[in-house]
Length: 236
Ligand SMILES: NC(=O)c1ccc[n+]([C@@H]2O[C@H](COP(=O)([O-])OP(=O)(O)OC[C@H]3O[C@@H](n4cnc5c(N)ncnc54)[C@H](OP(=O)(O)O)[C@@H]3O)[C@@H](O)[C@H]2O)c1
Image (cartoon, rainbow, N blue to C red; front, side, top):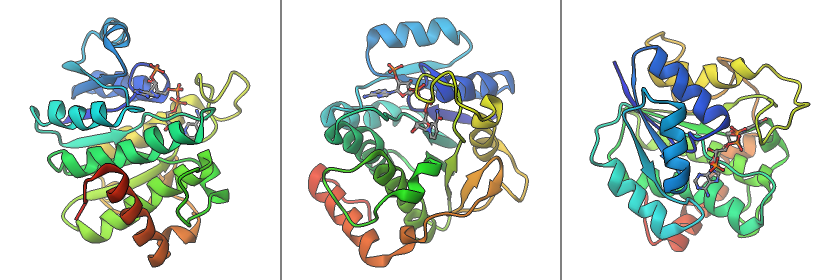
C-alpha cells in the first residue's frame, strides 16, 4: 500500500487517478482549491484518506499546502492540477510555480510525477514571466529532468496524458480517457522496472519523444533562478 497526494483531484484526471488508486487499495490524499470543492471531492471519493485545501493561484496558500502535506509521509506525489485557458499569471502560478514550491517544501517522496502535455513540444525554454500553456508544460518537464539528475535516489517523471475529454480537454477530445490517467497511477505505484526510472517523458506508459530544449543547461538554470526569485525558495 502506498500513500499518494494528488493535486487538483476534484475533477478530471486527478479525480480519476485518485479513484483508481483507492480501488487498488492505496491511501490517497486529495487536494482542492477551497472548502466547498474539498467537500465535493470527499463526497465523490469517500474512500480518500483526507483532503488538503489551497488555491494554487495564491503563493502563500501553496506554501501552506506544503506544510499541510508534511503531516503525512507520502510515497508519491502527482502534480496534476493545471489550468489551460487562463492568464499568463495564472498559468505561471498554477502550472509552474505551484509544483516548484511543493517540490521544494514538501518532505521528499520516493516518486514525483508531473503532468506535462504534448503541447510542451511547441513551448519555449527561455524563461519568461508571461508564459503560454505550452511554455509551462515544458517547464514542468524541465523540472522533472533537473530533479532526475539532482536527486538520483528518487524517481521524477513527466506525463503527457493525451488530449482527453475532461473539463479542460473538452467533450470532443479524441484520446482515450482511461489511458489519460493510467500512466500516472502506474508511475506512482508499480514496481515494474519500466516504471522505476527517472527523468522520462511518458505517454501511455512508454517513453515518448520530447522537446530537447528541456535539457538546455542555460534554460534550466534560468528556470531555477526565476522560480527561486519569485517564490523566495531555493530547490537545491
Ligand atoms: N485534458 C487534457 O486533454 C490534457 C492534455 C494534456 C495535459 N493535461 C494536463 O493534465 C492535468 C489535469 O488536467 P484535466 O484535464 O484533468 O483538467 P481539469 O478537468 O480542468 O481539472 C483540473 C484540476 O486542477 C484543479 N485546479 C485548477 N486550478 C487550481 C487552483 N488554482 N487551485 C487548486 N486547484 C486547481 C481543478 O480544481 P477545480 O475543479 O476546483 O477547478 C481540477 O481539480 C493538467 O495539468 C493538464 O494541463 C490535460
